[in-house]
Amino acid sequence: MTARGRWADLLPRTLSALVLLSAGAGALWCGGLIFTIFVAVLTGAVMWELVRLLDTSSGEVALNVGILSAAALVVATVSYIAMVPVMLLVPLALGLVRLRRQRVRFAILGLWVMIGAFGLIWLRNIQGLPWAMWLILVVVATDVAGYFVGKYIGGAKFWPAISPNKTWSGTAGGWAAAALIGLGFVVLGAMPASLILLSVGVSMASQLGDIVESAVKRRMGAKDASNLIPGHGGVFDRFDGMLGASALCFLVVVFWG
Image 1: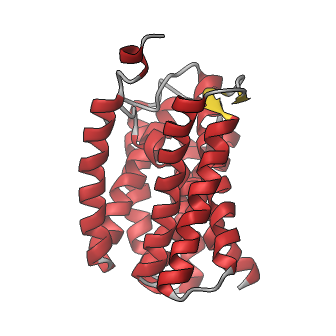
Image 2: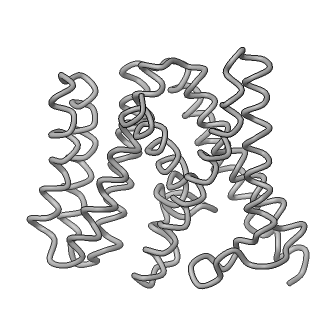
């Protein structure tokens, strides 16, 4: 592969990332309802893509599930705590009733998406801006370091049957970058030293989210979840790692406090 071919996707990928980062940064800074709506819109797009991936004949169902997912997520954030699980399960129930095939896979993946999205909102609006920034920076550092380290060093593939472009060097580079982000927050933000190890765990969860989404696409014979984001494919392609990381953080708090 020529040098130009190797970096052919860098420009559209970078421009799209800048737009997403700008919008995300603004919503993150505002927090509250603005951040909730921002995440809800992205979640609706992800659920729409998920249904289309699993059942290409369910265009209307995909749209309905996407809209309901976004609305349910907003309602869940302003509901009593006992109502949160109910609201997160509502779009899953619709999919289970309306989908003609891949219902179990949809239920599992959809639950992951909804928990991850709610966890991200919870982290920003309840735990505060520094914790949300930490999570996002860990995921972004994992992705960026994995991309560039993998491109420059190459080497053995991490899981060629599922994600042929990922290498062990890029994977380890993502872990190292996450640890550095954690160290920075420990030193500058006076956070506990255990955050460094948690950062590596979050990095792994982010990579696992990416691998799971890649496995679904490969299973369904799709290259991307959609073509909504130039250079990145679909919203699911871009936020699978974030959903994996935020789901892990939220579940850790729920089960271990």
